[in-house]
Length: 194
Image (cartoon, rainbow, N blue to C red; front, side, top):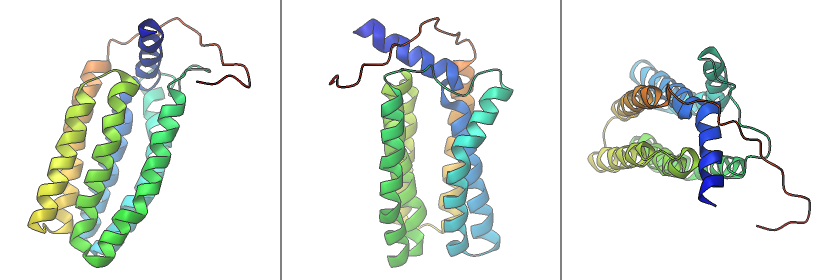
């Protein structure tokens, strides 16, 4: 079982450059929201972060391809369902963060830091990399502290952008030597259970 999991994680690391392009794309979305919060309005910045979030996957796939990786996993990789599930979990959490913004606009970005931090915790087993535990906890702690301090929305968004930029660079360095695992996954026949 460990070998199957190791191979699936290696395939994810190779295909998506260990997730670094996605962290960079997310950092850019946070940065755009921070700039809008600073120069425009925090309410507009909320929508900028949402719009940027929609673009994270396609931008990260493009960046992975530019960096020489396929930007996808092998068909039948059993971790693909975990990746999809974390995406739905994120989408289902967005109304909670938006509800926080309705109560207090200063709570939106800290709430999103908590949500995104929680999602990154699942990337630890998805990619087989402990750094995602540190990234997830760093975002969550930042979200809690910024929310408690009622930090300005632009400050919270800049903090999110900075944390993700730093970790994106670290994950990029960690993932640069990944090689194609050389395994193909057989999809389970219909009717099989987990």
